[in-house]
Length: 141
Ligand SMILES: [Zn+2]
Image 1 (tube, protein in one colour):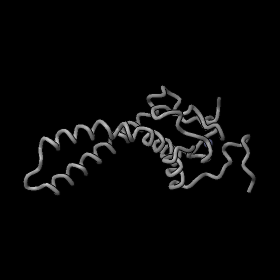
Image 2 (image 1 turned 120 degrees about the vertical axis):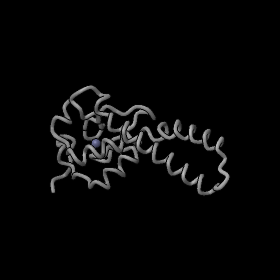
Image 3 (image 1 turned 90 degrees about the vertical axis):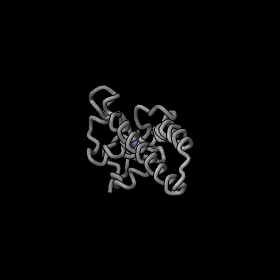
Image 4 (image 1 turned 30 degrees about the horizontal axis):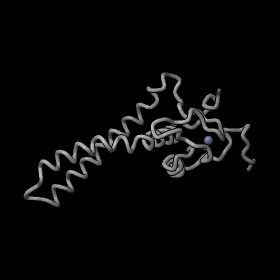
């Protein structure tokens, strides 16, 4: 096996799907595992400082690439809400506190996508890399 070099970004061992997802959740580049993925809670670095992978892999507008992340964030928010509501109903039945559930549900529906936002972007990038392995143009300047 050849050693990994910065000049050969396609050559690092491709991580398994599980490893890529774990690296993404830890805020690391899902391709090489070294570079930082997040610039801040709401922004992503443009590329990996280690391997040079562009994190926005689209050839179109940036927002179009991250549409999958927004969809993932929406799905997670809905699932979290559904689980929380079902749990609250089961625990408090037959007299659920409807006002508390309404307010709590609203807070949950606002907070979950904010908390999950960077993870949704990271997971979307990892999923994209799993199904569409990096190409040389993903490392272009
Ligand atoms: Zn990298």
